[in-house]
Length: 321
Image (cartoon, rainbow, N blue to C red; front, side, top):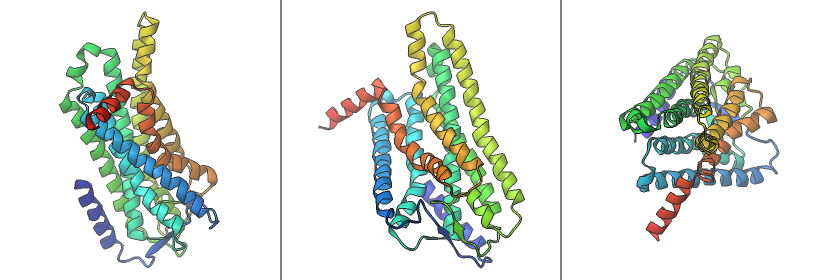
């Protein structure tokens, strides 16, 4: 309910602030200008979106239903699944709608709202991945104190801080963006609205907006990446002191899923946000990976090689049969 309230608040605010602008709509060019390709793309990305919804919903259900997974690690994983549902749902429905429609316009206010939630959910996920890296460090370096250090209070606090920092950061960027005047060129060479793709369309001076966006990116993406690298440097240092080869292998195996998610998220995220918005095929591929593919893959990454999740799925199925 809080997210729904926030959505309408941001929409109302953007509408109120945009009354002075002559430009009322943008045109999202989407993934392709070839109408014969649109039905194929629609079928492919509808499947991707449905797999994202089903996979992450199942992760939420299994973690909530199985008491064996009520640990800090799976608490964060549950938050990640919820975030992936939100992040993909911000862009996928509009993209799918445009693939079936000749009219690919989006209201300026709706575009700003979408840009807000893309930025907010992406920033939250970056902070959450940093918290998950810290969780893995405590689990490996201090296993006997793990439950005491990673208390429920600390875990909840880290999640709230992640959401709070990201939403405040996104709100500051949007507050500055709603004052921009847009020129006659209303075409966005993208399938979704992001702040970096709106700046080239503005007749106003966007240097302040760009500096704020750059600072936000440095704080949320580079800042959290530094924290993740520091956590893993300590993990490697701790694991190398383990004499047993089996022990080292087991310790590293608990980090594989998280590392894979980090590489997918930050690799595509950096390129999507730091490269100028041009609508090139390479940029589009990385944006798709960041917005849709990674949220679809995360449930698979965390379940295929995770014996605890597999066992929990079997227990949940038996329980409901």
